[in-house]
Amino acid sequence: MLPLTHTPHRHLAGFGLVEIMVGMVIGMFGIIVMMQVFALSEERKRITTGGGDAMTEGVMAMYALQRDIRQAGAGISDVKILGCDVLLRTGVTLAGLAPVTINHASIPPGDNLTDTLLVVYTNTNGSPQGDGITAQPATTQYAVQTPTSFVANDWLIAAPQTRGDCVTTPLLLDRTVSIATPNVTVTTGVAGMSNGTLFNVGQAPIILAYAVRSGNLTVCDYAVNDCSVVGNTGNTAIWTPIANNIVSMRAQYGRDTTAAPMDGIVDLYDQATPTTACLWTRASAVRLALVARSAQFDKSTVTTVAPVWDGSTANNPTGSTAAAVDLTGNASWQNYRYKIFQTVVPLRNIAWMGVVSGC
Image (tube, rainbow, N blue to C red):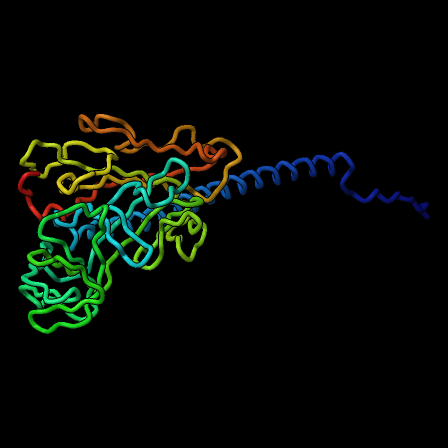
């Protein structure tokens, strides 16, 4: 009988400490790579999203401004009232009636080194030259040539036969009460308007002030609120934000400087506010730039130079003056990305008046 032999059991196979450590190191490298890819993807996503937001806000803001500037001057582009002060209501006078005023003296400044715009137009179907006043039976009555062009509740501005000092004595924004041919009866009236002109500015004249405030494009309705009060600038019910992350607005008049008679062609761009009716008729366009900022703050410097637009440099065309974009009012401006929008908007209601005699 053969003797029994004992075969020892083999030790069970498994991972050693060294193998576990190697596996952990490989796994950590894998996690690091995945986290880097994820972080890069999120950064790209934020940049893309922030750029898309800036694009959207800038486009919407520019659309709103272009829409109003294209209408600017409708109903108030005649030299009889251009540049005149107008009493809108008790205690509120609009100085210098004009289609578009850059940095109007009555409008409180916006954010540092940004411009403001005051845009005025009407919604009347009446003649832009107004209606001749043939007689004035009473202070509150104007006999006009075409009374059928007026209806009750229209707002009116009466101008005298000879343009006087309408700054010292502002014109009056008055309201139509009734029409009984040939008379137009108004609420208040101004004496001495025989042979003058009655301008119909419609039932809802538009007087809008635009400014960049706290990094937003805001608008104030001068027909309802007193936009000249500095204490109102922080009231969002009066200065209503219409586009976020708009950090700069710059504007210039496009002016015809050709010796009389003018030719209606822009010769230079500047910010010199016209001081006479003739000079207002020579401001036939507005050059405008808006700077939109991404909402995403970057830890590193991503912008080293402020955006540049056509109005950033002088002598473009010859004689123009500069209105460069300056973002240094915000200490961390270099940690944001920017998109600039610019355009030239013709003041067509001025152009349609043609060449004004003597201007």
